[in-house]
Amino acid sequence: MAVRGCPPPRQRRPTAERRRPRLLAAAGAAAATAVVAAALGAAPTPAAGELPVVTYMLSNFQLMGLAQGSSSAIRALDDALYFWGDQIPVNSEQSTGQYTWLSVDSHTGYACGIERVTLQIMCWGVDKQAVSATPTGQAALQISTGSQHACALTFDADLVDLQHLALKADTPDNNAAFLESLVPVCWGSGGQQSSENLVPPAIGNAADGDPVVSVRAGDGFTCVRTYKGRVQCSGAYGSLPGSAESQVPEGVLFSALTAGEKHVAGVVMDTAELRAWGDCSSLNECTAPTGVSWAGAEGSLSAGRMFTCALDTQLRPHCWGRVFWPRGTPAVSEFIEINSGMSHTCGIRRNDTRAACWGECSFGECDPPVEFNRIPCERHAARGTCLRAVSSGVCESRSCTAGYTWRFDAPCGCYYKLSSISVANAGAAIGGRTDGGTDCHKVAGVPFFFMDRVDQSNQAPRCQT
Image 1: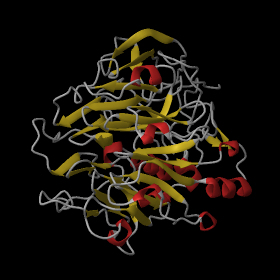
Image 2 (image 1 turned 45 degrees about the vertical axis):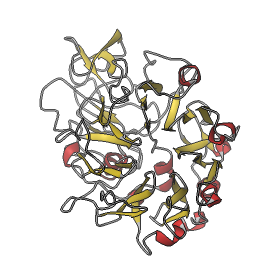
Image 3 (image 1 turned 120 degrees about the horizontal axis):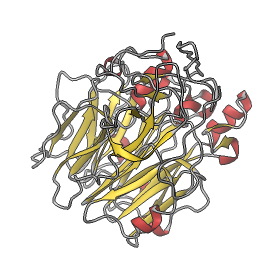
Image 4 (image 1 turned 60 degrees about the vertical axis):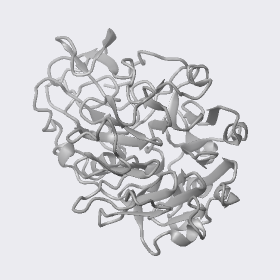
């Protein structure tokens, strides 16, 4: 039985059917290596190197972008982009309402995103060079915004099936060509102390399987990270003397990286230790809490103006530095991604995929719209019976009426516990044999996630290897 994707409940432009194994890179990587995690909360957080680099690049996408006075997020169910707060960039509604989206980031006064169908870069907002100088006709897999400049990780779109986010031909030559085509680019205005922030550091070696896989823009600096964890920065950290390059910890490999206003933070590979550097204030945003093991995946840490936030290995957030906020950091909630603006942080919660925010929230930037936290309900049946009927309208998360279940980024079919079930190819059968059994198929490094609300435990996976 071929299982195809459901039509999204809200669609501005035809949304390409896609493989989107997104549930926090940490969980995705664990799923790729174990196929089925016994329980997501107990899943380990591996380094990026545990995923094949091509799969890693075609499955890691930032779904939230925060700025001063505004927040934005892509709803993974239908690739719709939502903004909230009183200071959202001008033309946001007009720009985003026409498209579906793969990734987004924003800064004070402007925002940039990667449009889902063509994967091209788009920026909008006030008349900054970061908007007016946006590269045209350029496909990208990652976007990052600073105060006056933005950066993206570009690639050769001719090599990739953009609909399914996979190489057109999975051959050694195509893999090598794809890795060679990964190039970080920056545009906009040079930093106050140095214009070198517009020139990403020249590190990365595709021939050695170590291309640049992450680019981050701060206020006056740019940092990149390679697949194997090497990090380098260019520009300057605020008024700190010396170049940004000279401050990077020497010989340290990082599994994840984030850029704040004037500082950088990363999680060290293999040790789960968090290191930070740059123009650090007396508020200790560069000094992480002790005794905590950090998740160490893309999307699991973020930084703003004199503060840093990160998820621990239990996916719970911690923030330090300038965090004297009216809305405190959630103490027990678990998140699949976080991102920070200048003075607030938002995350997508693991258990129900709702957006939640904390920090200084004077402009409504911490209050996601009700529409973002509504998701489709689908009719469910007995285990092993797959139905394609979709309920009309939407329902509140975890509040489906009798006979329906809610889903997170899964094709029509049978729905299991929050665990990973990989399929042999896009549209392949997923479980649901007529005899009531389950079939597990996999392709290396491509996890799919399902949620089953039939009972209350939401722990044990039903599909065993």
